Image 1: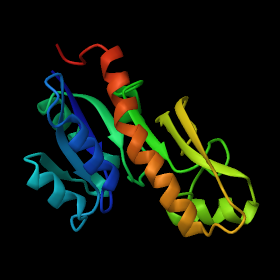
Image 2: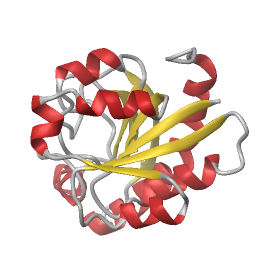
Image 3: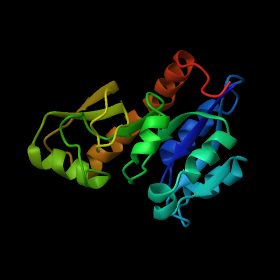
Image 4: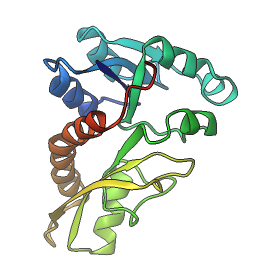
Length: 194
């Protein structure tokens, strides 16, 4: 059994899709949900599904390695960021190199970097007048949205599409592809703590 931790900051629609996808899987399990917001609705979803939760303070995340202890206690093999907005600290990147992934709602390297999250991305895409957008699933490193790309999927943008229209279309791609890409990665990485 290989175990997944999801890091999320908000409502967690991607987190929910991942949990649903792996629910009946005998080989992979979502064991822990980590959030930097005590009021994040995603925590309720985790509790409803019997998944342990951990609330991160900025101090715990950046000034201690308590998080690593928690990840080891839950025997975590892979970290999936799903709308988690804090930049991963060096100790975490090192401990989970090749085992921590993020999903970005645009085709990187375009429309990435600090402040490029949520509707801000789709507004930038709309303003640029590009003919397509999409998703990028990538490894996490110490810079926003700059780790090696694992997977991309694109969708056309019509001239009349608003930023909200683009957001809806891109979210459908996220929900369709994120969990299967995580599964593929889990199949191919060895267990972290055997």
